[in-house]
Figure (cartoon, rainbow, N blue to C red):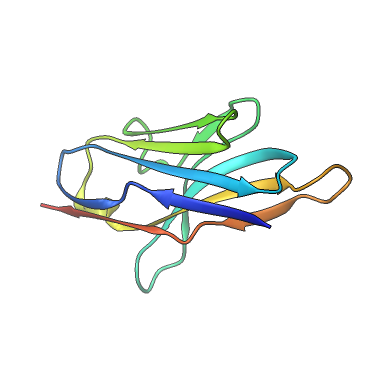
Length: 121
């Protein structure tokens, strides 16, 4: 069993900063890609940022330069530092991980339960 648990969401004013965390637990052999997505009601879930096992990152153009994704492999944790927040960043943020539970098993994609981020103007 693998679980992803997010934390750090909240209500903020435009221009403020926030850091989200997501910790993976359970039977984990290795974690390949970690990422953050977000979703607003009535819209598809969209990619925010991903980070590979070698530290390569990729960002949505809407957050490039404002958000930073990082990972702590010793803690099986991924972070999303969000600066200069805008009202349009308001969404439920989900973390995702590509995990190999044990040697010889296939990679699986796992999702957290989501954490709400609300940015007021």
